[in-house]
Length: 452
Image 1 (cartoon, rainbow, N blue to C red):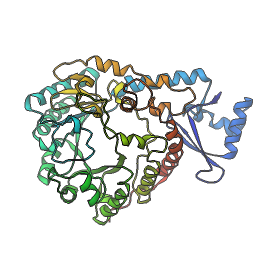
Image 2: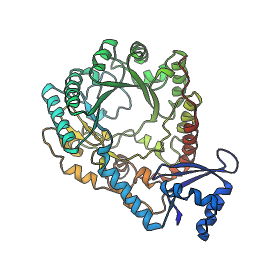
Image 3: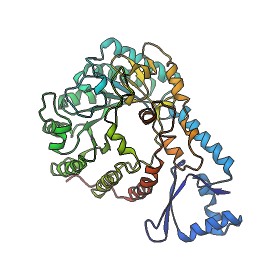
């Protein structure tokens, strides 16, 4: 027997002499003391197991901490990726639907900037989408379906949300399928009346994008005429937060990061922070170039944010700040499977009915995987699903189950193809021990603060 190569150890945490052990394949997280770790190492070397190791041996094996040999570990890894690729239908099937590419904001970093057009989802295409989803659900025996309405700004074209949600809800009831939907919006068009109508059709959550405090947000996400949007959004949230779950998400770079912390203060002052269902922020990332030349990457300066140093300090300090305020966070240690290679990870359908497997590829038909007018996926779907970039990873890399060779979109940005590695091991070596600590703290954190 031997220790798994996917084990990561954090020394002297949470106390002196303690060790936190995290396995990237099984996501097991355990705390042991120095005595136990030394005894475990000695036992595996000698083959003699004292009582304290014997009584925990089964749990260590079941959690992937210990494996019989390298062959067993390799077999488990292959089965792990097989399940990711072919058994995602056991999870909720998520379909993102764009009601339009148009938007009433002029965000300076919009990743759809190069593909924006005056395209709106119409009645005919809405029906085709519903038929496609029903056929897919029936064929794959899906039991849970969740739709995310997106854009552009999805509420600029709200009729398809009514149409699709009603049809899917009625069908799901008859088939005993769990159905619901959410909306990702800039927040400028939310109203109590709209919330009431959508709740009756299965609305579960509205996620609103806010990029920092008033000044920073208005600079990054103004209306087309340059006027501010922050106060409109906040007023709209206040008007509906008692009716529907509201989440807030935002984007930041190194310059705008302090504004995110100021936003948290503001939300708390306005009696909103602890009434939000979710809250999270992520660095701005690059985008593909114009339609005729997607390899002409734009916002390339953002690539530095995912390098060795990246936005390490900002990312960790923000997570710690949220936890300090009593808010549960997602540490980022979860399995981040790329949807390009998963059979039923979910899809995105644009206003024309074109299907994509990755939102970052929206608007580039050459990267689409199908069309709702056709029941089967196209050749791209099969090409993407056979990428299996993890096979190219070094055998000694403990992060393979978590990153699978890196994001395929980042591979395209960095290598002009989807098949090469987009390795971020140096960054992971730096940030993962801190994320493991946060995961441990998150598990032991009390409930969220009560609403003031």
